[in-house]
Structure formats: structure tokens, C-alpha cells
Length: 271
Ligand code: URA
Image (cartoon, rainbow, N blue to C red; front, side, top):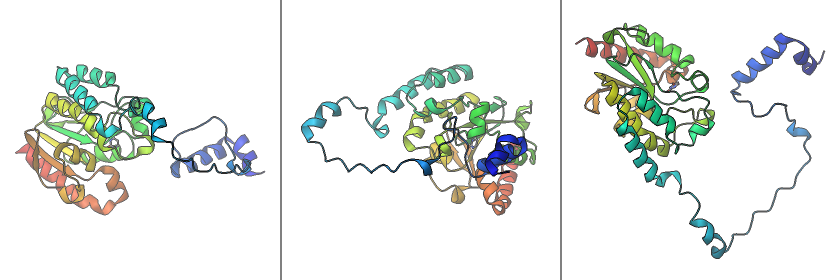
């Protein structure tokens, strides 16, 4: 039996083929039927177009949207909407209404937060991945399982009901970037007012930033591996940078330092 026939007729072979593709990084379905690009006719590459005269471009220049970097209006609108949100439900609704971030159009779900709003520790991640996008909850994939195990090791959990034993988890971006690419600075700028408002509403004793994106969002610094373990201050409260659990999955040797950071966090929240 050929491999194609086998996949078409044997459920287990089909599942194995799907798992193999998933392991290779194929996580999104683009179309219903496969396209054999090797059998497509050769199409001559178009010649590069000659530059248009300035007079031909001018009428369009005024109407095309400005690049993301210059969308100061979007940042101002985000600030205003965030400031008006008096509680978490209003903040969630404001983010849902905010229409300037292109990521929203490609996402299945808004990923707002998880955990206990009264928690003493707020954990800030980067952005949802494929599983989070599907479930609408932060850190539910492999990195999330590790995150839960890490905090459980110091007696903290997202399901705890006592504030001193609980964590509250949210992300810098509430929508999944396509292909899990890094968030762009313009996207971070746009969503920062919502993140800051979110933290103000939760009013945690301590913020833990996991990875480069949340570190940059709250402190303007980059270089999580250098910053990790060094307490600083952001939004009038102590901030602890830690390596992202996805990084720890790829670099198990770094778990040693992460453990030291967790112990420092435990000492801080118990002290
Ligand atoms: N990584 C993050 O930073 N956040 C999530 O919610 C999931 C993975």
C-alpha cells in the first residue's frame, strides 16, 4: 500500500502524519485540499516594475494609512479607553472594542487573563500561542504547564482562592501574533496602556515579567537573560524578571537559575 493510500484509509496513519506535520511546525490550515506545488506549470517571473512618476503616486499618498510606527492616534485612543475602564470587565470590553491592532483580525479569541484577581503576584507573559488562541486563556500549552509547575513548587497557583497563594496571569498582547512571531514595537506601544491599566486594577504586591517582551513593555529594557533575578521597580511596585518558560523548555540548564528566581520571589511575598 502506498503512503497516500495508507493515509487515506488508515485512521492511525492519518493521525501519525498529522502529528508529524505538527512537530515540524505546521499549526495552521491554509486551505481544504492539498496543493502539489511541484506540478504547477512554470510561470515566468514578472519583470520588476519601472518606478512610477511622482505625479502618479501623489494622489494616493494622502489616502494610504500611515505606517504602524506613526499611529500616535491609536496609542492615544488606547490610553483614553484604558483610563475609562473602571473594572476588569470594562477593561476586557474596551480591549475587545479597540480596533487598531491588526492581530485582532487573525485571532480566534481574545486572551485576557487567568487566575485570581486578588492575587499578590501578577505574572506578565508575552502573547498567546496557538493553544491559548484556541482556548481564550493564557499559558495553557506546554510552556503554560511548565509555568504552573514552577509556581506550584513555591506554593503558588492560578487556581488558588487565597490571595497569598494565588497568581494572576496576563500577557502584553491579548491576540496571537501569526506564526508566533515576536510582537512588533508598534503593537506593544498600542497595547501598553491596557497592560498598565490591567496591572493598576489588579494592584498586585509583585509583578513577575516572563521573557523579553514584558520586560521591555514595563521597563524599556531588553536582555532578559542579563536582567533575570534582578529586582527593579515598575508602576510603583517590585518587578522580578524571569526567563520565559518556553525558553526553559528549550534550555533545561537554565532551570537552575529560574529556581533561584522562584525562591527569591517566595521570600519576597512571604516577607
Ligand atoms: N507564552 C506567553 O508568553 N503567553 C502565553 O499565554 C502563552 C505562551
